[in-house]
Image (cartoon, rainbow, N blue to C red):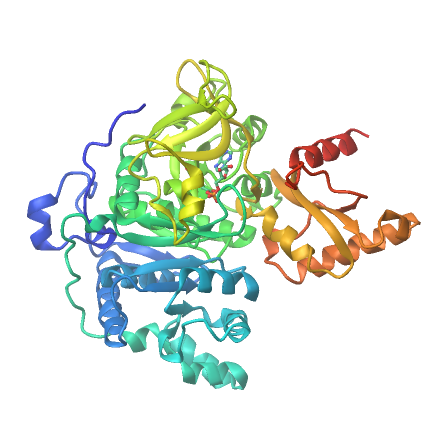
Length: 571
Ligand code: 4UW
């Protein structure tokens, strides 16, 4: 169990972050802002151009957008997809939807049409914001299925008027799209006063991020307003919180709960400044750190590897950084030590969590970890959370210090999977315990370590890669009879790599020479790469085998495939 967060606000995400006067006197506590908000301070800065929005501007634009959306006939509780890389506009679109009281379903900008289509259909999105450069993927997704409920007047460009005009001047199909769709600025109308939530409305869904959970394809994770507000409140009461004077770098995708909560919502509660980069790119990162004197960055382990080995770091002044917070994938003690030895002024710590837990459930305090032999551990439980370690087969808690599946309970655990009661029932145990599918241990002092994963998921550089999705795709290839996909760990890259074990049509015998086998593997690898987003590519290779190991009920025995990969490594 754990300490409670002092006060859990029961209000919408929008009112929590941008409280209006009437609300203030009744509910305001010292935890909202730390210290008083300076409405004129840059809140979100474009890390490439330096263009920024103050807190007041974000609020005004969001309210203007909400009125504009309403004028287009979009109502509360409708679902709006945001399909774009991190940008200042992304933040405005997000809070515009929240000010309206509708739901944001953010989509990964790396999606290929089929992946995007799955999310649009499954979430039943009825309006969308699309970055102009992603329109070709977006339009292809729409063309693939006319049943998607998105008409031209409910598709908006995630850009300002100047960018729209530039694209229009270029001509071609882009210019046609610019004529068809409105951009954010063209939507703005007189800012209204967002409706206050009545009691219980904070349990409404605010976000639908997509996660495969323990098995199968991506599912919409219903994150309520209360889930998010509880989470940021807990973050402010835990570890070494970010502060007013911090400059926080946001380069992890906003479409993932890690970027969404930790780099948009949390900094707003302390009125920190967020420098936005569309994605992690070494030189852009170093330039932004130097130019904006970044103090704190949210990362995934492969970014630390890239910086550790980069010859470019020495050319920039990165002395402003006080710490990196890593999450979304295992961070090894070796990597932390190597990094801290090379950059002694940077403290590296990590958190653990899931889309389903909004996301942070554990976090390591830097002072408790440095030089105390605890690097590699995920830290203690966050305020508001309760945890159990459970023996799956016996169905009861493990003995102290033994390993067990991590079960979590608390106000930031999702409501469930969107319109998917059977998947929801599968991951919740009686008493409201959420079964994470990760195996953990806890030491005598209360520090947790993740030691294994019992669910199907593969993580490539922090991104989810659902094996079932790749398997379903590969089975559609005419020369593939059967397939099983697993993740293989690469220490050099500090990430898992998706690997497919494939049974070729006609069996292994149909490819008698090593060259023919190699050519077949390469063909499958390339074919898959053309169909999926970058992170799902089969970077761990395509291995040809005669039969995929399966249980009597026909379930792929991934542990046998994993054993095969370990054996091959040893040879
Ligand atoms: N060590 C080992 C870790 C770790 C980990 C996650 O895509 P999702 O659903 O969600 C995330 C959440 C990222 C995140 C969590 C906590 C945190 O503090 C933070 O910011 C610092 C970011 O990625 O994937 C969930 C799965 O990812 C694995 C684990 O298997 C989990 O079930 N995972 N963090 N530190 N594994």
